[in-house]
Image (tube, rainbow, N blue to C red):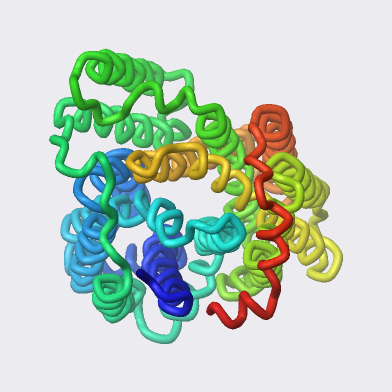
Length: 480
């Protein structure tokens, strides 16, 4: 049995592994100009350095979660981190375009395996409601705020060393994470262990998700009403229908269809799609506003995100857990998303000559506050509503919702911004598009707040006050 100190050390090691994977989805963005110059990418082919990762990552999350339930969540997590580390070596040593894109795709598969079981491992580590709330809040910050941290690190590493080290820095971290997880985290033992994998279902649903991600990321260039986009979306939908038929007929399905009759899991997934789309308005549209309109450098953009991320971290670690234990899921979720919507609405009126003190920092802080409060209840609602033997699948489903919502949100918001600017690439023209994109992002956040507040079923209130009393700051510091 894990001691309290060992449990928290194990948790922070898991967070480090998750952070490494999350960072890699954005840290490479700052290095893209250097990669293009060094390896001779065209503008169109350069996108595959990002898209190759997104395709495999988004397509394999659900599969990774189920593999954790079947073969052990620690085993799948370590396999994912090992594969991610090896693929990082391949990316860092790449000398050709095809080599880099291939290893980025491998990174996506491995990263999906590790990320898909991450929430489930946290749930396994902490059985007490108050500690689980605190731990899930921190995990939510890693999943949501880590991307913005990657912008800062990408700029620093690329400027100080080279783009190769954006990937190579993962190697010592990955080795340490694997060694410590094997030492500190016990393997999960569930009722699902030993069952055979539904290979047909796995292939069909992974193909459906990868096709959906590919269609979304290419929709802006191909056109949302084009035959290619509509045809691929229809094919993706058909594959999902085939998957449902398969799952209804096999004796041991990849996904038990009744799982999504769990009200909180279904609502959390819907909130995840809407909230991720809203968050991408923050991360990407704000970065574009700061660079293209206010002419910030890449490093200054990253530093501008820092206050919001610090606020998000503080709320995730302490405040959010206490709010969930005191008020349940609905009030913190609705309040957090409403505060975030105010932050996005603030950006929706950002001027051409915006100042850091009034036009950037206040909405950043509001978004950090709202995000820090909101992620904890939506994650806890999803994970606490399923049986232990299906926690990996639930974790993979939540991650898939956030990833798909983010990809779809980014594509839609970028399309809205481009359409509203009417091809005017001047700062004033771009700002017109950004304003509309921010407004839509704020609306998505409000919609997510309404869905979550009305749809979630509250957690059982048993012993809530007793657990709340145990969650003191002194205990948190001592346990870490």
